[in-house]
Length: 302
Image 1: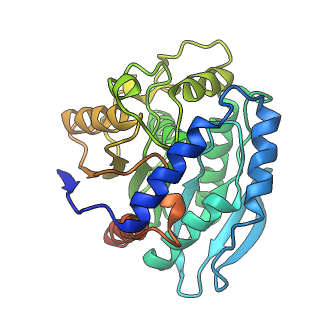
Image 2: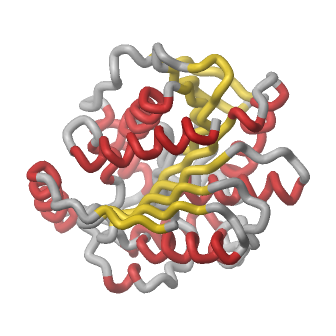
């Protein structure tokens, strides 16, 4: 099933788009990784998490993770959350906030994985960390029927790679999966890489950081580019994407391949939305609506 959100863009969305275009024009997309991380750490100080949500660090068989728990959380159900960040930056408040809002709507806690990052740690290090943390959940008594895996951007890539790896290894799969603007093709062969004017993201930046992560491996390996993977046997998928995103084609092709593999998939296209619009949930109505939709999907499946 595919749904296109035809609502008019909100005033907040219109203003944010304009601001993002200005910021994009002035951004040094070729900056070194450490400079990008410094920018993220600085901007992270400005982001406040919902007061009623608790953040508790933990270790999952040696992998740093965080429990994100709203007051209304079920004790059994878990959102296994894999953050984005182009494979080069870690778990910051900007995405803790998204995960926290999803948890509140879904009445469910999340386990967020702080996986190893490129270029210091190359493929498959980040994927291995996600697999270790997922299996740790199972070892600690969480049923796979009570888990939904969710990831944003590069985290959407790792969400799919984790599912493919678990399936091929014979591990029990989670009840469902959420892919928010997933990066599925590290070569950037999708038409939207060339045709979309994403206000928030540079295609050159995506291709550069993807190669950092791949570390010289064949970019068409399915665990690097799930676009080339066999999706048979995966759990139900919710895919959200904005129609202004350079990753628009990645999402469309993922949905097409999933349907062809008899996977239950719901693709939702948000008009006039850019990469990462969920990150503006406190002020952007479209972000809150998209997060509510994710929460409804999670409650439906666990």
